Image (tube, rainbow, N blue to C red; front, side, top):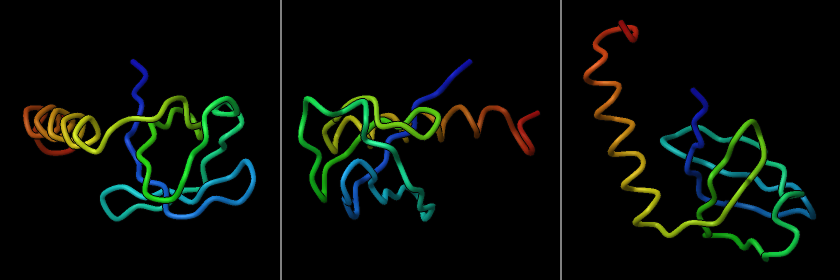
Length: 79
């Protein structure tokens, strides 16, 4: 299964953004978002290092709530 991770854009430098979520920071490639401007403060869905779509803050929060529920149901160490 592949998951997209919601992240907030902290900095944009050309086609690279510095994004964060839950205390984790990553550089994210914006190449696939060329047709849609991405600004600091926006939320994006990140898959294998690429932003694949913009999302609202509420959509990002809902996704994280669902991921947290899945992790809690899986128990310690996912198993």
